[in-house]
Length: 188
Ligand code: ADP
Ligand code: NI
Image (cartoon, rainbow, N blue to C red):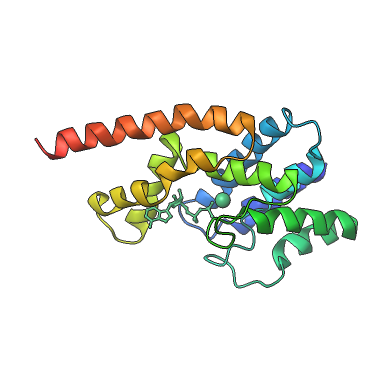
């Protein structure tokens, strides 16, 4: 099955990434995206699955590829037809927060994977990822608190699908609770 092959491919691809976040994150995004897709009858599940699993394989922060080369290499080798490959890449390219400022992805598949990626940036997982990212860049926890106000607390209101909006609510409240407790403990 192509989905298992894609999992193997990204496990190998993100191996160099010492914290393993690339693989674990992509797997969570895949599960979230499949779950959201089940609530969106118009979504093509095959496109959603592949786009979720491959959404960070050409992330400029990790790879110096052009034109989704890693994702395309995988799909070509596994006999994915060019039209499907293009649709997967279109969804992948619509996900990025910084690259598409303010623009909603045009396809339902892109909107779903974007929601899944954003859900994985908030809640308990989002908190853990934020401090892991800061630590990796040599920053003390205090410095990473900024990131909640600059980005993470804004994500709830940027969700595209009804199911992601619903799921974001719990995760958002958990972050607010965390920040409140942080304030209480650090201003003691
Ligand atoms: P993705 O893996 O989905 O492409 P990013 O690479 O943008 O996500 O970020 C990885 C994780 O690090 C995310 O959880 C994100 O919120 C967090 N992060 C990104 N920028 C910062 C920052 N300046 N400070 C703290 N955390 C950050
Ligand atoms: Ni991601």
